[in-house]
Amino acid sequence: MHEPKASVPDYNKAIQLNPANAVTYNSRGWAGFELGDTAAAMNDYKKAIELDPKYPDPYNNRGWAYYVSGDTRAATDDYSKAIEIDPSFTKAYFNRAVIKMNANDFKGAMQDYTALIKLNPDDNIAWLDRGAARLGLKDPMACNDFRKAGFRQ
Image 1 (tube, rainbow, N blue to C red):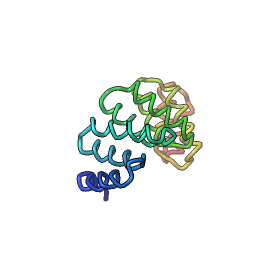
Image 2: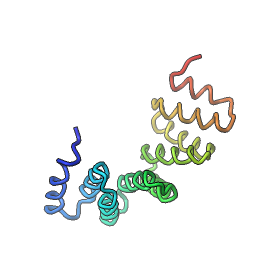
Image 3: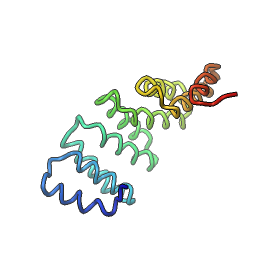
Image 4: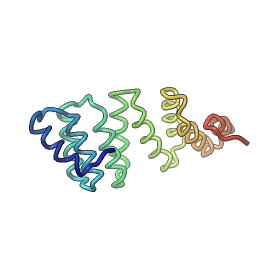
């Protein structure tokens, strides 16, 4: 089980030993975020991105921090960057789709859920959420997505 408070000193030590490791900064950022230190988390995500701009995880994690703080534009930009770097990065598609759903951009959300389903056709949540997006568009195909998600009439 991940214990953020206990892991921070280990991440600090790892950074002392290898200050060029983007993964460690990203991991410490997530631990800091879970502990409620958003500013420290954002600094760590920024450092991880500086060290390895082609590493998608800190973009996704920073996007989540932006989203939670209410900055959906910055969150969307970070999720889009993560997807640009790694078009198979399912978490970023899901997170970006959630923002689009909340903004009633059902067409945009449906596109992200469709990409997610193509990457992981067994993801029942993606089928369910795409069905909800279709429902928002008054698309009768929503029922098919709900069935794929495991719902039966």
